[in-house]
Length: 295
Ligand SMILES: *[C@@H]1O[C@H](CO)[C@@H](O)[C@H](O)[C@H]1NC(C)=O
Ligand SMILES: *[C@@H]1O[C@H](CO)[C@@H](O)[C@H](O)[C@H]1NC(C)=O
Ligand SMILES: *[C@@H]1O[C@H](CO)[C@@H](O)[C@H](O)[C@H]1NC(C)=O
Ligand SMILES: *[C@@H]1O[C@H](CO)[C@@H](O)[C@H](O)[C@H]1NC(C)=O
Image 1 (cartoon, rainbow, N blue to C red):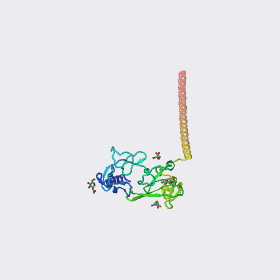
Image 2 (cartoon, rainbow, N blue to C red):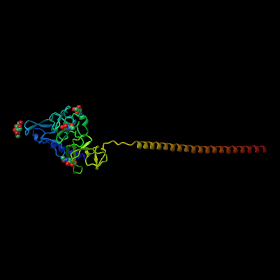
Image 3 (cartoon, rainbow, N blue to C red):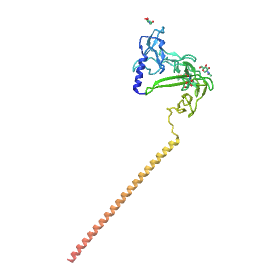
Image 4 (cartoon, protein in one colour):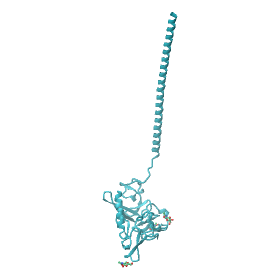
């Protein structure tokens, strides 16, 4: 998505979300945005609709926040507090509430509003919060075992793609234990599928990633290089280094040999020259003394 589009969507969201930033409101208008599933009310991002008369309430500052960095507050602005352990902050921010036991209502995608099961250590996985899950707006434990009846919940998020087309993303969740998934047609918990098995949706795969019809490693999986590839690459590097070293040594030796040959030739030349000079000199002296004797 282009930054401009994100900016436009954020601005549109702000405008839509705050039709009456202060003043009167009706809690009846609290709802989730049908496309993005974001909480929307008559009040701004910093306030919530409070009052005994539901149809005629007022927007008052939020009492709590659910995120470290909540949406709709600018930098340096005073933030409402986070909730202590054992409590949660509802979407509207109306104040911390105790965790909800199973069978009671919770808000969409807020598994952490549900209290943990006694066996939370065993049931906790990346697909639930401490062994609890919020499905169809009801808290339950993700404790259904292999072959037992389970519940699924489909949530479809809509977004605008880069070319303006609508993109739908459906997330299916179930209350099976980890390593199991809720088959949507039979509604029974089944084993998740290993890598490379044919699949239709992400939850079917143990890796939680169904790509082009087959279970695949998730994109964030670190790339592991096999030991033989490491060994082969290291050996290759060492061999190339040795070859370069040998080549340079040989070239250097050849150079030295050529140079010493050159020097030797020069030396012999010089000696030959010297000998010729001496011979010339001796001949000249002989001639001179011979002429002198004759004279
Ligand atoms: C809403 O309540 C205020 C006082 O709290 C009152 O003045 C006003 O008339 C009420 N409006 C409606 C529509 O009931
Ligand atoms: C899970 O629940 C247990 C028991 O209530 C609690 O001690 C633990 O802190 C919880 N873990 C998380 C991540 O909230
Ligand atoms: C699973 O959790 C539900 C509550 O969501 C509980 O009623 C049920 O007894 C649990 N089943 C098992 C086998 O622990
Ligand atoms: C949820 O979606 C799956 C396929 O993604 C479908 O088979 C199933 O019927 C849907 N369930 C509900 C309750 O809509």
